[in-house]
Length: 328
Image (cartoon, rainbow, N blue to C red):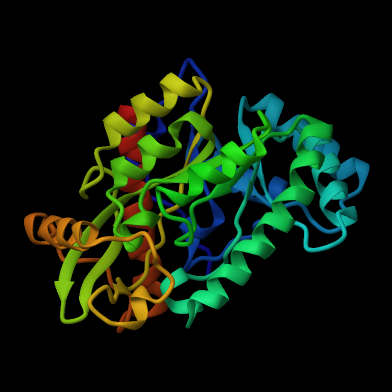
């Protein structure tokens, strides 16, 4: 069943300038629309957004790429390519980057880890293997981004801490390699949102804007994406800082409507991969949780019918889009 967003009149007002706010496909975690560029851009444009992060279909032909570019240029949109880092052979990665460039993409967003550090790894050795593998994959990707002059933003995806990630960008020292700054992910690693954003701001390429709410539970705290402006992230400060570093940066909403994530920072397993986290990180995070009780119950989808979950997702995305119209 297809649902549309019920947008406010304010959200639908046309803008005289380009709107630097859009969506990632994961913002539609329940609806699950097509993630491919033309199809997803058509959807978000119909909602009043200014662009999107999206994939390209495998073996997209020249006609499809031309359609994407034409749609983007005609409607004054932006789009950024979602693309995994290469494993060993860069052929498929380079093919996708070249195609995205032809289709009018402005940048690439990628990740090193698809899961969560504190859940994925059971030992420090496993984490160190991941670090070595990540460096190899990055070293393959950066020359391709440089070749096609398409900046590659690597997301902080509940893997690298605010101290670890800037070292990656300093090591490769390329104007075409930097950060896709997710505003909320590193709360799960006990970084404050602004600490992470300030650490990565000099390297910003693209973003995942979101707001976060927290709530204490026995093993640590619960973490949820919430409508923009309803959480603990200082969004105006973050937006201003990133624009000062990259004036044309785009803000792609990555708002997942789901049950709260459990951050088990009071369990032994949580800490097995952390050699540079200190007691102050834990103390500060728990103090933040206790000082920022949620303004409303954290979103949950367990127990909802699909139609009820879709309606909840639509309401939240509508709120986010209306907030962005007023603030971005």
